[in-house]
Image (cartoon, rainbow, N blue to C red):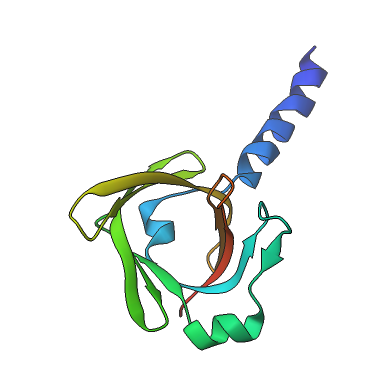
Length: 132
């Protein structure tokens, strides 16, 4: 039994280490979109690199748990967020002052890359690179 625990404990640590560690500190900064895919579209599609370069989209997270999305050099959206495991619970402030809640699931987060996606038919999967 003791030998079995010597095997199980390192495996559990490895599994736990493989999940992205979401924290305000890790998210804070400007993240330039490198790839935008719509895997649930029929047929699935991905924005071409040239299209992305033309609109230069990014999402920026602040230490105050605020976010803003800029697309084509123009403000697109903004709001606040909270963290829950691998999820970012987003609250978007709409033009009329009302709010809309949605979730971004984060499947990867490193010092330089993030992959997050929204669910549902209109869901998108974004790969972004952190600005230096």
